[in-house]
Length: 64
Image (tube, rainbow, N blue to C red):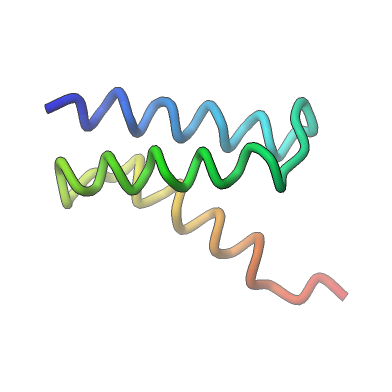
């Protein structure tokens, strides 16, 4: 129930953190939490999986 809403919130927070509206270290944990809530409700939620994948790619890649 409400998996899409949590995924939408995760996407919103993710965008805020990546475009610099809010500091990433402040807002991206909120995005991760919302995406994980969405996946706890619906394990095949594509938007929530996409957000978590993008967050992992951005944080794990060596940008040097």
